[in-house]
Image (cartoon, rainbow, N blue to C red; front, side):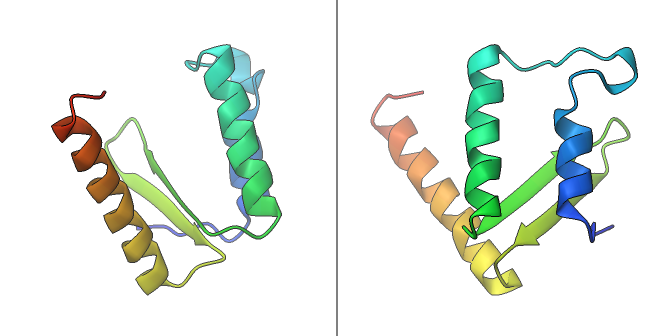
Amino acid sequence: MEIPRDIDAVLKRLLDPNREGEQSALAPEDEEYLNSLIASVRLGRRAVLIVEDADERLRYMFSNATRAEAVTMLGKVVEATGRRLADGEE
């Protein structure tokens, strides 16, 4: 797997609305939410970014976190999602 060294370049490429004539698949409110997450990362918050490319390859990066911290964060996401699903939320 490739681990990008320049988060700004990756994020710019992902968020560029005029990228080679492509339109965003995200709703405007999702674009805003993603921008708020990126702002948090830039302020030093820990993050795990995972993108599945068209060829089904996963690209990821850990920002401001060690691998162990990233795995812990992913575990928290799975746990919280499981609780919401068990409570009938989606």
